[in-house]
Amino acid sequence: MSKRRYLGMDLSPLRSRDFRLVFAGGTVSGFGSFITYVTIPYQVAKITDDPLMVGLLGVCELVPLLVMAFVGGALADYLDRRLLVRGGEFALAALTGVLLINALSDEPHLWLLYVIAALAASVDGLQRPALEAMIPRLVEPEQLPAVMAIQSLGFQVAQLGGPAVAGLLISAVDLAWVYAFDLLTFAVSLICLTLVRAVPPPPAADRPSIRAVLTGLRYAKSRPELLGTYLVDINAMFFGMPQALFPFLATQLGGPKVLGLLYAAPAAGSMVATLTSGWTGKVHRHGVMVLIAAGFWGLGIVGVGLSNTLWLTLFCLAFAGAADMISGIFRSVMWSQTIPDHLRGRLAGIEMLSYTTGPLLGQLRSGLMARTRLGVTGSIWMGGVLCIAGTVALAAALPRFLRYNGKDGLAQKKAADAEYIAANT
Image (cartoon, rainbow, N blue to C red; front, side, top):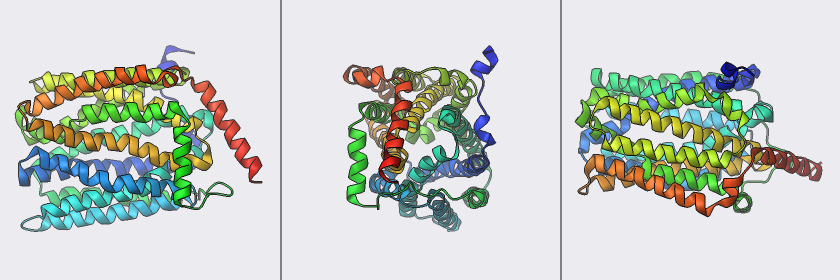
């Protein structure tokens, strides 16, 4: 194999018509959603001038997410997953419309921003497990590492372009126009999802119930390597997620015009990691790679907190974003290659909690710590130090996660799927 192919991306999953549609619609919709993702904290900061009030957005999102992710996971294992995803897009578009109307008022309501954040998190909790459970059905199992990289690339294009455009729009036009731009992107995703063929549930699917949710939780508990992916990511994001402080960090580094750059820099690093991700398909010690990447994420965040210049801050954010992307690729491969299809929705709900609760609680952590003597930058670098320390502790506490080999996981999933089909046919 040539070095170029080893480093480059595998684009073979794009031969699947339905995967192409989901990828295209998600990328466009994600681009608009990242614009709103930047705009809401900016609007809260503009109204309150308080980092804790921005951090409280994460709390508003976390509470409904803790419930709805389990509900969404159970529904994803029982209903047509495409319909759940499409319904979620309709609901998110409607909530963006409310944000637009609020921005048009002479005195926008602060409480409404928190309500919309909570409702959007609820919809996301219902929609995301279905989307993640649907993807493995659209491609071959052996293509999943490439699928994770391709999806990540689309996410990074949205994460890189959305905040950059948001920064330009926020400084140039009224906030209502910013929300209007996001609203238009939903039209593309809805058209794409309408064209995707149905993705029916597995045979003899479990009805949504508390018992079905507990079945998913028991399965997750029985897999220490899966628990490792959850715990490592929660640790990294709780201590090392400083985004609630970006509006205030931007003030120190150049004002609103650099706000979009701060949000976009991690995506730039992630994109570089993705475009050179061909090597990830040849690495099977996934647990080791997740731990190493989490440590490098913490190191990048330490650099962000200690930097006092814009270019160095952006470089450290990009470095952290690249590390996070490597961690995300290996975590996603572990999830997608090893979890049986009849449990995929419920486990996707648990996964969603793992990669969303950390950042949401991390926003609150960073906001609270910023109000102490540490200040904004001290809150950031201290979080990075704690992230590294937590990663080292988890490596020592999770020996099975450290020893995990992807070849064994793929064989385990094939055996579990075959056993389930044989028992229900």
